[in-house]
Length: 231
Image 1: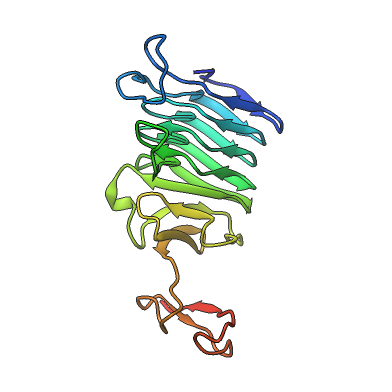
Image 2: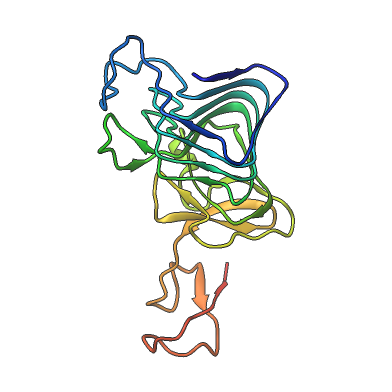
């Protein structure tokens, strides 16, 4: 990896480009990571301390685990920048463990990272976390992240995946999407981020969770519908 952080603070600023860092046990390189990329973390390993990403991009990095960033313990604050186009078997954008704290805000984007062995991989694998990882939307968030837990029970309807600062909202249903089941997205309930189904407005209700608000026209009339939560 390019950087090992065991304590202290490191800042990644706007204009910084970290790319094509690949962890493999020999001098062989290939678009296929199978049998070659056998070690963790393509670019940055956080094993304590704090990494602040304020801008820039991390892309083209590869490893079996933690394609771009691996947070074993410590804090990763992301207020801007992009982590995209990275590849691994587990946590291609960010691989986070139980002692990891992820604070996301601003126009941060962790998307377009995939799980698989080749550049043709199509399974989303942006942020992968263990039970106990802290995911916090702790400031105004206008970006986009994909997120899933290693434990299947945490990737289901009504599961709590993180927290959000009091009074904040998410810009759209695509702000925080579940990579394990992309029909699920996070909505705000108090200060919790809870997984729910994406809205379907072709019917009066979406599995009892939402209904169309009044005075917004009728179905198929080309008008935009509002929705209100009913449970």
